[in-house]
Image 1 (cartoon, one colour):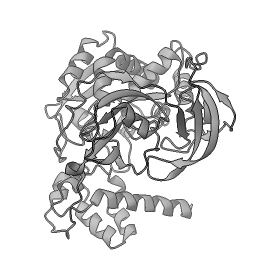
Image 2 (cartoon, rainbow, N blue to C red):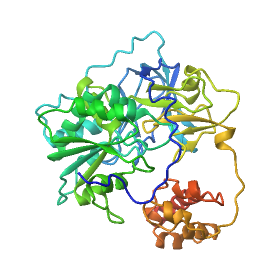
Image 3 (cartoon, rainbow, N blue to C red):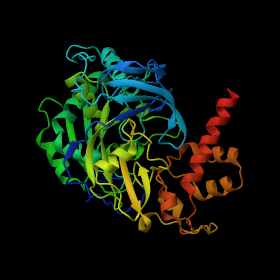
Image 4 (spheres, rainbow, N blue to C red):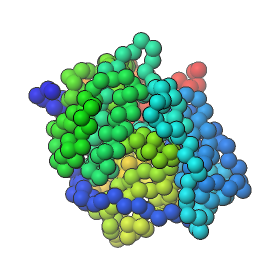
Length: 442
């Protein structure tokens, strides 16, 4: 293992994990209604199957995958389809969604298992089972997991990296999964190593989670080549390119994917989800969510049915404090502020962070002073200062020439900018515009 278990640049924001790091995962009750957007993952949205009036059981499919880079959506509770229409989405837009009135008297017993037992399955059959289960990356990106299990022809993968860094402030979802379900994590690793045909796996965990590192090491299987490695605490250590550099010394070239240098990276929550899929036969219909921050009364780690509304999580955690001013889905560095309490928890929702005026007060923006702080912070070595000036001038095509595509919107540049320029937000808008232009040109 390498001596320098970190990467170049990055920042050290306050961790703020003490609110929930020691809080055991507990189950949230089923709500009266769940809302399931068809757009819950990277790639093509799911294709609607259900219609108003349909009776569904827990685990029934309400939308089908619409292509290879797509996954189905399943009912997370038994009930009746009330309506299908537009609903507030966590990304701030409106999205087509299935609304299900939950049967308050149902025991919520799932239908017979839809996922086969994994023993004896070929790699292709495992990939199909993972896709049918609707599994996506649970670290926030929500990329369909089965796609990572099927590298393109001619691409040789030799290492599986399990991402347990969880470098975002406040969030402790992955931390608690590693502490409470380490055997499940190892089972998921076993399935992925079998499917990818790799002989080595490394679990990377930041050193601020010593109990997680200990739990994983104590339960390591004797018959698998799996190592648990503590990592330097730095943001964004959990971004896959940074994690690969820290653990293997390999660098992912611009425009390439980790598998092009022989590595597949998977979030520890997604690994545990794969294990649960094959243990229970259930698809991905619930996930662990951290509800935290100084603005919520009882910070918690919860098992939440996918489709539960934001307001229901907050009520279960004691409600908001009087000085709460902002609610963020995800962490404060890369998360999205929520304008609507009816926005649902979707598959990629890692946490709900409630901030007060002290943490979220707006600061006046000043002109760029060319100090270079953003260059020293950027972990992918783009020039945020130049990109910001181009964005302000509306020269978006030139931003693409200046390697906008390499920016991962981690927010390091915005965090260190003494002029309080919202660089990351500007880059996100520019990326969205570039995507629209490509779609229109196609």
